[in-house]
Length: 397
Image (cartoon, rainbow, N blue to C red; front, side, top):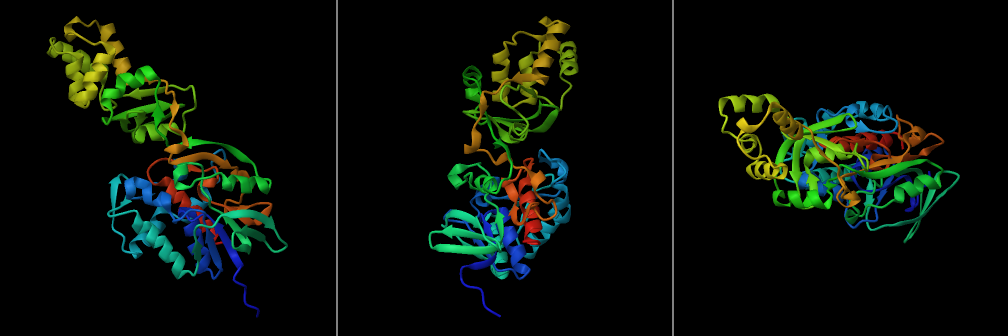
């Protein structure tokens, strides 16, 4: 039997991120000759920066309901076949210590490097080659698969997997390359925009909240019938924190956000009872009991709530309760791809097999991870999609 030349592979994967490396190891263990290419100087850059450098590598409670897509049923099959428990077993096999920071959210105890090293080790054991600093200049179809033009010459493969990610965090090397490949082969791309991203504010409100930069408090934020109860963080640019990042994926320019600043309180009842029990007490006193001191003070001043509660009519108290329970703000916009954790939209999944991630019209061309129109909530879900879609393609490519 003739041996394959140094430029011939069974599978070439473009993108050495979470989905690409997972796919490479999976295909390699099937005995496929696998090459991973990436234009960046190091693999897994987004893995290393995720979770504040500790990598929120999965969510034990991840279900298809935690994902946004124009074709919501698409992700179900892959997520069912490769679960958070499956990935956790891999992590445990490699002896990586981890902790559950918030319900279901698993992080490395030491460093995100542990997850990247695990994936690179798996690729090595599976015989998959990872080649960095390699840009692909051209892709063309051949009778038996694909030919890729790189700086050192041509590479050929039977199966081609696109795992190039989305547009988020361009400083990490994110580009629109994957979308261009999809378009080259006639696929539809759904409009893309930044997801899981902080909000910017109109100048006036930004100035009013400026003294609160760095203050965090738990809120319930609502937009388009979606709501999240998580911490909100005031920054020198606007609003961030898990609550704002989560709702940003559902927000569209021009929308207002309704923020309940005291989701654990029955605000109106509390204020009426406080007026009865301690008439000299103020709204400011009430806020200081339930919100960080700086926030309570600034929000009180912002709304001009002065004087003791005995001077407040029932209708006044109702008004205060409405403002605190339904603080309405209209963001100026978001910080965009510069700080977005993910890209919404992407390759329309109606053109792909939910079993293999392959293009229905071209069964040896695959799209996985963030490049496709599947976006998870914050908290480890996007990594779970990377692992699940990577395994699905790796078992087929």
